[in-house]
Length: 292
Image 1 (cartoon, rainbow, N blue to C red):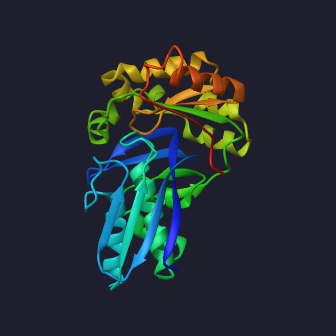
Image 2: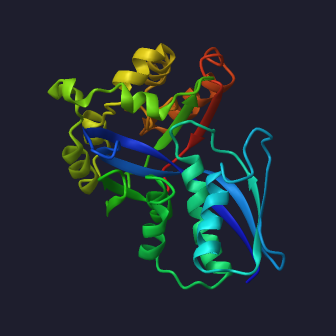
Image 3: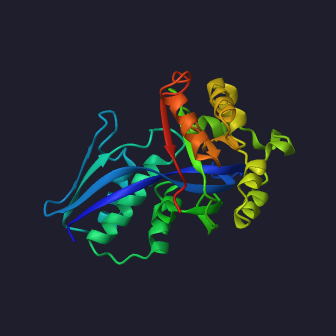
């Protein structure tokens, strides 16, 4: 096999809690991750010429070691001393720097693809061990579905998928630094009510109870991101006004998602945020659903 077409799926956080800062500077987290159907497209080709070549549809994206896709390919090429190379073409659809793990999803797809086209024989578990070296979200992006994520994000426990629903995603025209958000959270200073009840969200998934998920979902990082960027809260309020069961920021932001049990309400929200009276509240808007 010399060529693969791959899809790299985004994620949202159905709930996100930060437990403590570690000695190594990372944070221990406990969160529920959910893959969604919004995805990038990647063409991966094995070449006789050594080296890595990367092209993208966005001129501002790096095409060298500063791109996680490049580093993912490099990791396996160097480890297995491959004499041939890879050529990658990325069509970016997932918003960049959005809290949706777009870069991690691309890297995960490349790990999977390089393993396939070079017949390296790595199992899913072996790929995940390598994935964590690229970023905390990359192991989950290899796994897909719904999972409880612990440690720095690399300890994954598969969960039942979300009940049937529709998702509206809206990203304002701002960028949020993940490092800034975590640095300014001050975990020890947060009141108990700031921490979402992750265990109840997990129980609600096992019960396939979308409303119970809505009642218990939360994201502690909103306490920093929403304070610094009030437009995030405004988007949440607008999505709720269109009938979402709940609305949260994904990851460290700035993308906000709303969960709808009524497809018509979801469609109406999408149309109003994309083309209607609220079209200026977000720069990018998507209508999608969970990936199971």
